[in-house]
Each structure stands twice: as C-alpha cells, then as structure tokens.
Length: 412
Ligand code: SIN
Ligand code: CO
Image (cartoon, rainbow, N blue to C red; front, side, top):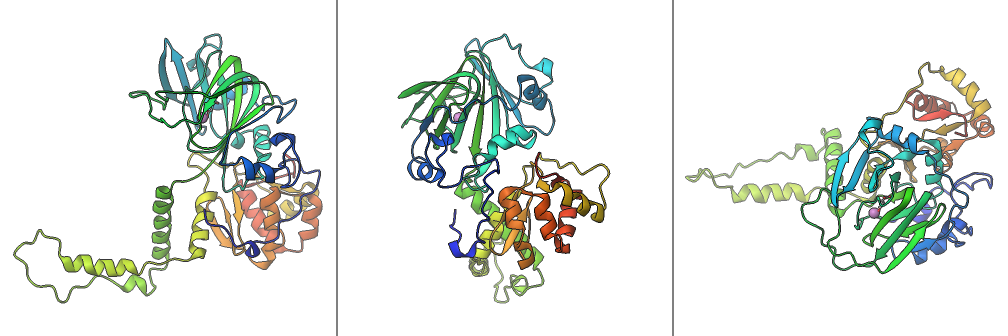
C-alpha cells in the first residue's frame, strides 16, 4: 500500500491515558508479550509467528456460547459450520437456527462467526486493542466455537491473524511449510501434507500471532472458543480492478469534461472484404485513447479511502426509531458525548475524509474534530461543548446520527 507523506497527515491527537483501547506505539504491553507495538511491528509483523502467554490476562469470552449461537442465527451475520464427523470434512454456510447446529456434546465440529465486533460491544472493544495497526488494515474479529477435537483442519491463510484463546484450551501446531498443496475435492482448504514444527496448548488469555502463509492447525481440547483478529490485504488484482472501476465512475461523474469528448473516429477507414476482422486502426486508436487515462496520488488516496471504508455488503445500520431534531441532538450530545457506531468506518487523510464508503473534503473546520473522532471513535461531552460553536459539526453529526452511523454517549 502506498505510504502517505508524513507531513501531509494531520498530527495525531494524543489519546487520554484513561482511554481503553490500543497501546500507544512505545507502550510496553502484555498484549504483545511485554513488548511495545513498535518492537512487535519491527520484529514480527508480516515476518514471523509469536506466541504470547497471557496477552489478555483474566479474559472471558466476550460472548457466551449461546449468545454466539444467537448471532449465527441472524441474516446479516456471516457464519460457517465445519464438521469432521467420521473423518469427513463438511462445510455449511449460515444462518443457523439453534436446532440446526449439532449437539454440544458431539465431538469434532466448529462454528465460525465473522464480524462479531460489528454486533457486540465487548467483541468490538477487544478488537480495538489492536488499533495500533491502522484501521485501513484491520478487518474483523471472528469468534469460533469448537467441541472437543473440533477445528478447521491444517491450512494457511493469506492474511495476518492474532488467534486469541478466549475460552477453554486449543492445541496449535504450526509450520513454515513449502508444500502448500491442498487435499483435493474438499469443501474447505485443508493441507495435503501438513508438517508441523512447533506445538503449544493455548489457555484463555494466550495468543498466537501468525503472518500470512504459515501453516497451522488448531484443535480444541474440550469445548473452546477462539477470537481471530484478522486483517485485510487486498491482492494486486483486486486493487487494480477496483481502482479502475473507481476511475471509471469518476470519469462518468465528469462526463462533460474534455476526455469524454474523445470519441472513437475513423474518417480514414477503407471499405473491407473481410468484415469479421478486427481493424488494426481501431486497436491503434483505442490504444491512443487509453494511453490518456492517467491518475495521481490524490486519485489513489481517494480510491483507497472510499474502498477501505465501505462497509461489507451484509452490514445494515439501524437509524434511531424516533430521531432527535438537530437542536435536541446537540443538547443531548453536550451532556453525553457521542461515539461512532460499531459498524462505522471513518478514515481520513490530509485532504479528505471517508465515512462508510463516502468521500468528502476535510475542510479546516472539520480538521478541528474529525481526525480526533476517527482516531478515538468518540467525542466526549466536554469536547462536544468546546466544539459546539462549529454549527457545521453539529449538522454533519446530526446527519450521521440519523443514518445510524453514530450513537449517543461516548462510552458503549
Ligand atoms: C478457528 O478459530 O478455529 C480457526 C482460525 C484459523 O485457523 O484461522
Ligand atoms: Co487460519
């Protein structure tokens, strides 16, 4: 991903020390095995696995088993059931009514629930501990539930992942494997020749960080739950396709512009006896039109901001049932503060901000508070009072409140 010029980014707002969430870049933290995020990023991130005992001491599962099963029953939640009964792998996609899940006494099955952070404040708070990595890279917090012997089989992922044990025990075996061939004919990706090199049993609070492509297999020892904090790393192919789509959309928006007038013309076309043949002149001229397609860093940043802040297709925002009018909203916010909804993605750079897939200019007025809201995901009551002269702020936040993008109260 392109680096943003350091000096073009608004200075980060220092976080208050009582802000729950991610460690600061130079703060030693048990989350990373008494390392600082800077040390972790330099030595391990995208480089090598790290086992961290008691990364989150005293942790309890953010959702109880039955609450997780309830999530898996919802239409807007992505869930998968993987069974390994009689030595046969099987995969089904949710939603699952409670009676569609195997009995919890039955061995060797696992339920994976994606995006738990979008639906539960405790899961969201747990994911926020990892915000020493940019939001643009964070994907979601998945929770898996497994009965004894359950797992998804030895495999590798294309993304970095923190595997945090949140309930019960799981035996992890990992290996830097050359042979990444998969067992054929299975509904899920299971390695054909898994050769583990290291092995640990993780207990609640223990965590394993894996960079992409490290082969791994986690098998539940008794009933267990694991939270996977996953990252997004779009492929070059996906980025190219999406960027070209973004450029095309923008070209449509500016259809009155000069480039749109460069329509294909062929005043020198000769008559042909082979009408099926693609004319060389056409290829040449279209090549010349395409050679005029150009973009700059601003277009790339605009693309990334909109693309990476776009909620997943199954995300639905809940607007308030009886929305306060703007004045009442401001009065309430001055007492309670506001916070971004769990599902809201808010990114910014020096020029623009991007909220849930929409881009807008970051004016100097907005710069006073919007980067702070994006970084801390909240504006406390006191802060709201200080900023309240900014009528543009109240109007914009009221619009977001009506869309269900922000919630009243600085704390969930
Ligand atoms: C799991 O939690 O069961 C699977 C997570 C993974 O291996 O990526
Ligand atoms: Co995995």
